[in-house]
Length: 479
Image (cartoon, rainbow, N blue to C red; front, side, top):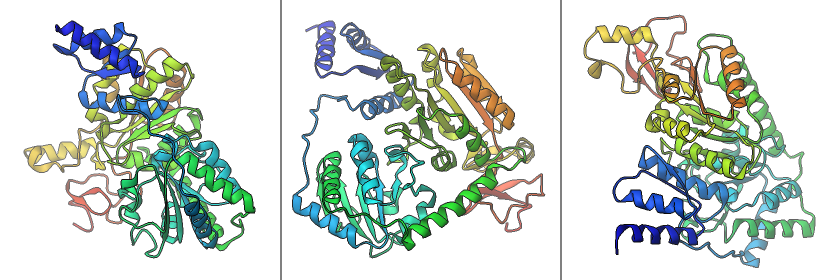
């Protein structure tokens, strides 16, 4: 059998499995496979990095719900009726209940049943990062702004398609009540009981199980009261945290901080846009400030916290948007470190005219960086490989010029006015991708380090300041 015939067989097999997209990097003899795939009606997207190609392929399945391999879809299964009854009984007895909505609920298309269940039961809910949007982030029952308090004090947690991994602190003290009761809903039997033994295990299809729980709640008319001490505690914490975030967002100092950037970005993003995000502070703070209103409209580093996923995910989302003509913008919010993992994929975006909007929140480093003046001071001291803190990157790197080099739009952004203008222009352009290189304060963080003196403009940074993630130096009061 020659290579062409073999390539055709591969392509026809994939087509028979309803594969619509192929992401990859060609070389002999893979070229023939890609050409045969195109001939068979499969869309081929040539990437610049195999890792990014894999991320793109994985995102397609999540976004569309269609099989992206030769494995058949699993059967839809229900939980045992007795387990449903027991789960409802545990929920009714809870003083401080909490629903955690995970990525599995999004993948399982459980949004309709879940919304009715939350509203009928009156329970507070907390989305995981990729569970955002299954119910809108601005839903009155969403307590994401009081996440730490909700996790710490809940006495019963209904876990819907979320795993008790590092994202949820493994379900263990000191982040969780040591006596918390977990009602675990999952499709995979091997995930039941990982890290914490559940009080009730509901194995099966999440949408079907939520429908079962909804039926039980609806039949006896039970609803968790809205005037409980638990609800008051959560609402007070939400209000307090919102006040802090608003104060940070409205700071007029230059350079901007994370909160200022996200405050203005959130005002301009369409509610139906797909938000792709990765980074450290960029992703973490962005989760709290960039709302999702629709299911499967957020893609980020996920369970394994893998950096480099962003541009591959964005390319996949843009390819789906183009083929289905949903008229939805794809906005990729990246830290400068995360962008570096797969930054050459901007050429892929330009080659296929994919109108992705990339926002690089650039703090000159990993977690934190230094300003250009400090970098020059360090360079005078000797070999930067021995002096520069490992978390630092080149100050004010021109990532915007990487985009313009391939024909896309690039913007260097320093001010609120420049940010708003560049983002509005980018969102209006459906013909080519854009990149906003947003320069922020290198020491911007979620917390203010008590050892950094804001009045000191020059400082040679020599060490990493823990636990704040800053670099501290000769002028630090705690050297």
